[in-house]
Image 1 (cartoon, rainbow, N blue to C red):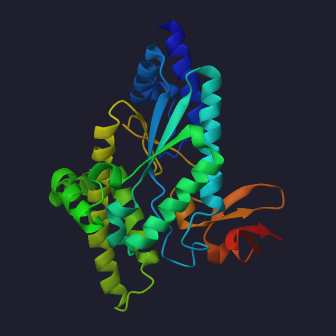
Image 2 (tube, rainbow, N blue to C red; image 1 turned 180 degrees about the vertical axis):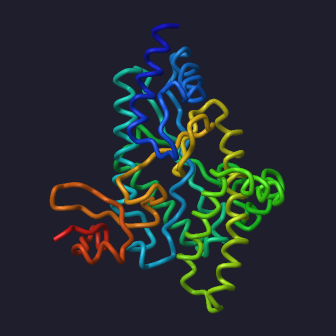
Image 3 (cartoon, rainbow, N blue to C red; image 1 turned 45 degrees about the vertical axis):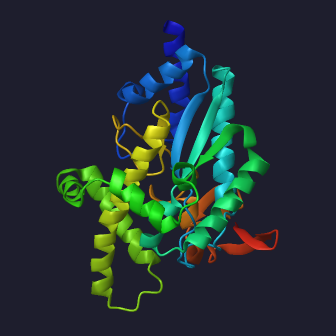
Length: 301
C-alpha cells in the first residue's frame, strides 16, 4: 500500500505543473485523482486518462490558420505523449490517453459544419498515428451511436444525457466556477460568430442562450465518457478547482487559461518557446510557416 501511494503521488506530481486551475492547492487536495490512480496501480494496469476536447478548429479566421489540425494540435499531442512516457518510467504498465473528440456534440451550436468536423477528426487520427500511436486512443459519437446522422446523434445524446436547462441556470447563478465557464463559452461564441448579420445586442442574446446549450451538451458528453470509461482519471481542458472530479490540464503555454490549440495558432519565439495566440495577434509577430502545403504555425521575427 505504501508503494502504491508513493507511485500515485509521483504520477500526480507529473500532472501538477501543467494544471489548469482557478486556485492554488497542495497535492493532498486531489484525493479524487489519487484514488483513481491508486486503483490502476494496485491492479498493475495502464493508467487510463480521458480528455474531452480536440473538437474542430474555431470558425473565426482571426484566431486560427485553417480548418485542420496544425502545429498546435501536433505539439499538444506530443506533450501528452511525453507525459504518458514519463508516467511509464514510474509505473511500468504505463498510461493511455483517450482523446474524446466532442466536435459533433455541439458543432451546430458553434457554427461549424459536420463535414468540417469529420475532416478535422480524420486529420487528428492521422496525426496520432504518425506521432504517438501507442499512447493514445480516440473516442467520439460514432463509437456510441454508430453511423446514424449527426443530427440524430445529437438528439439522442440530448434526450438521454443532457441536464435540464433550469438546473444549469441555477448552477451558474450559485457557483462561481460554473459562472466562469458560462462567461468563457459566451465569449467564445460571440468571437466566433463571424457570419452573424444582426445587431451586436441580438448576437449577445443569442450567444448567452447558446452558451447554456453548449454547457448542457458538454455535461452530456462528460456523462457518456464517464459511462464508457468509469474508472479513468478524468482530465479537462477547462480550468478546474481543487477537489473537482476532473483535473484541468494546460496543453501548451498561452496568455490565459481558456486558450486551446483549436482556438488559436502556435507561435515559435526566437528563444524556442512555443505559445498559443490568436492568428491576428500572432501574424503581427512573425511569418506563417507552411507544412504539407498548409499554414502550420508562425515563427516570430
